[in-house]
Length: 162
Image (tube, rainbow, N blue to C red; front, top):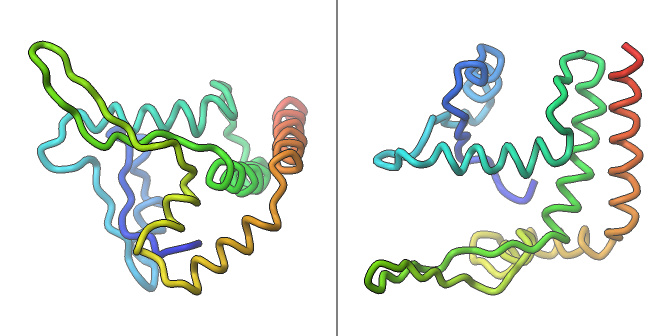
């Protein structure tokens, strides 16, 4: 991981606030604060739900995958998907909103991947940036896509078999 986990924001649903999740984050050598949303931002739930769509539903669909045997397979899938997403999938970032009469104009920065945003930020040391750059140079997006497809097939084959 490029940097230490500072906080963990969960969905407001009680199904996500499990004992195991609390224990995992609060009983670490360096405890991680868990919150439900930002103060005075009652619309944060929409942002959480958006990530559920892009990070869960688009990859795994709506099928319930509850078998404990699938956990290592899904974790492995997300490690590969995370590398693909963080190094090769650019996103827009809202810079500012301008109100002109009844319209709201949004200005976005140029599309960048999370890797590019980290590389260009002052949050990481040069050593951390060099490590990320070396990791980036060893990745091939087509190979990652093939690995993701193979791992998805394995997850769904295992789920159907049970």
